[in-house]
Length: 129
Image (cartoon, rainbow, N blue to C red):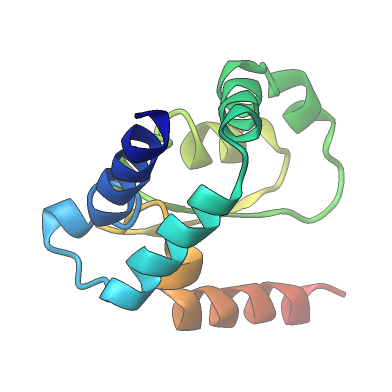
């Protein structure tokens, strides 16, 4: 039924493109299971509406209005939000943005690259006057 289909969808997303596991990124079963459990805990309608909102909303005017120091971090092997239309384009639209590209890295950076991400965030914060 619907619950089984949703469970399978989230399992395929976790075991596949979200963390780049389908491209041989070493992502633990625990991380993938935690993603699956969080996905299953979310209402299906809420998840759908969230994805629809962020994927169909044009944020370009908002990005050009940002006038504070901004760090954009994006993996260039992101199969969920492609780098060219995500991080790269965002950094182009935000005046003075610093872009850090994680080469060959997937969408789920807070899990797959958390130590590097934390270091880059702290370095950016500490570099501000």
